[in-house]
Amino acid sequence: MDAPDLPTGPFVTEDELRDAALAIARYACNGAEGRVLGDPVFEEVTEKRNHWPKYSACGDLPQFMLMKLGLRDERILNRSDDGGTQPWSIGQNLSKLVFRTGKAFIWTSITKRPKPGDVLYVAMPEHVCVLEKLDEKAGRIATFDYGLFDAKKGKPAGRRCVSRFRVQGKQLLVGNRILRGWLDIARIPGLLAPS
Image (cartoon, rainbow, N blue to C red; front, top):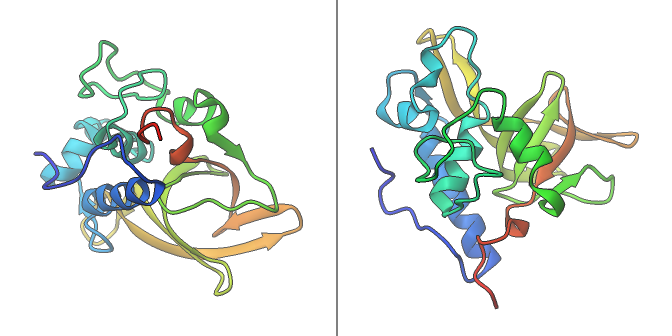
């Protein structure tokens, strides 16, 4: 099942890229309503891997978003449906996003902040999600997350989440997790058209 009318890159402006990233993540999560195991979109995002015992799909959402944006670099992408030659590989979703993106990955600095559409890397436990909005003044951060569990439906899930955001010493906290860094999607080669 393909996402309806979602734009793909390369994008002319950073705003267009970020708007498209949010549209893809919102679609994948069905906003705050969420999607669960068995939903055709959930199955597309996870490539049906969430049926495996103890599987966490958190990395599937950013990987899906980047593929839908038009990224085809398999040094970063970890999917079987990306049109490339390398199939999905266990243990690579998070590590490719954090450690194989070069200067596009920003390690947390007390003076910098991620922007909408960026992929956040938080720990402990380790998790990645897509930033929708950061309202530092209100102490709130909204993200799109997979690797969740819907207790009412008793199934693995993905949805929009709102958490507390705060600065504690030299650390940025998303809920109770430390924001280790983020993948700045505007710095990924090929997503923005050459000016």
